[in-house]
Amino acid sequence: MDSLNIEMPLVSQCAVHECTYNLNNNCHAKAITIGDGSHPGCDTFFSLDEHCKEQNRQAGVGACKVNDCIHNEDFECMARDINVGFSGNDINCLTFKAS
Ligand code: SF4
Ligand code: SF4
Image (cartoon, rainbow, N blue to C red; front, top):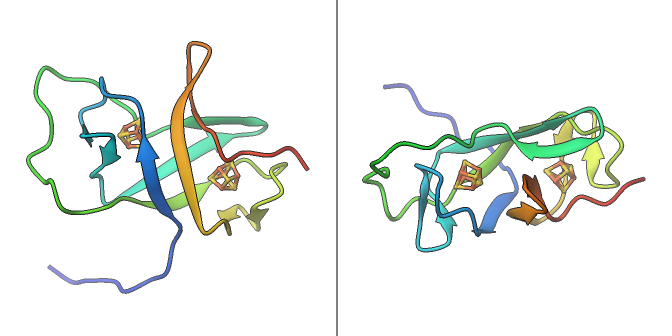
């Protein structure tokens, strides 16, 4: 497989244990996508009976479509890292801050 070496913000913590990519409060997807418009939901969330086998990889933020967050530039996240978790019933980027 070809590989990319790109900088992206890390998902430092995720509290959504129901997600297939979540083990021990961490996201182990390669990269996640956040939101659209003004809603900073985790678009990569999905739930199965089983969880991913990868336990060492830490996810990055591959893309973010929430362009009214102060950390968003040109539809990319420029924060150092983000936290994901519940905001009410929604699964959100908790680092979101409205601009
Ligand atoms: S950041 Fe999103 S994809 Fe990753 S474990 Fe949390 S809810 Fe799942
Ligand atoms: S901090 Fe802002 S720009 Fe970064 S992923 Fe969260 S909502 Fe998107």
